[in-house]
Amino acid sequence: MEEYAIRFRHTAGDFGPYNFPKACTVLQLKERVWQEWQNPSVQAKLRGSPPPPKSAQDLRVIFGGRMLENQKQVKELHQALGLGGAGAGA
Image 1 (cartoon, helix red, strand yellow):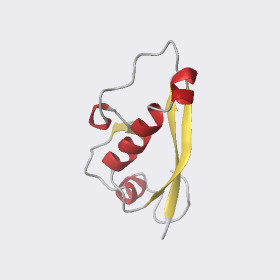
Image 2 (image 1 turned 45 degrees about the vertical axis):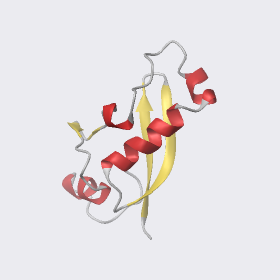
Image 3 (image 1 turned 90 degrees about the vertical axis):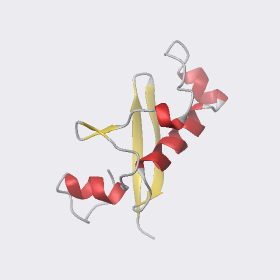
């Protein structure tokens, strides 16, 4: 199974990188980040930041200057940026 190692940037620091299958959706990415955000050690790192969203659906993920749609697959985003099938990072 081919995967991408994806890092998420937050004003207080990065999450990840996490490995995701190319066929996963943006919503699945959001769910993983949201779960990590609930971790007490992550919350301590983000202390002083706005509170975490109430659900993964409330997260906004921006990639290549565009807000991502929940139903899009990761491989579609990689191709949309002209990166083709090569490379393991997004």
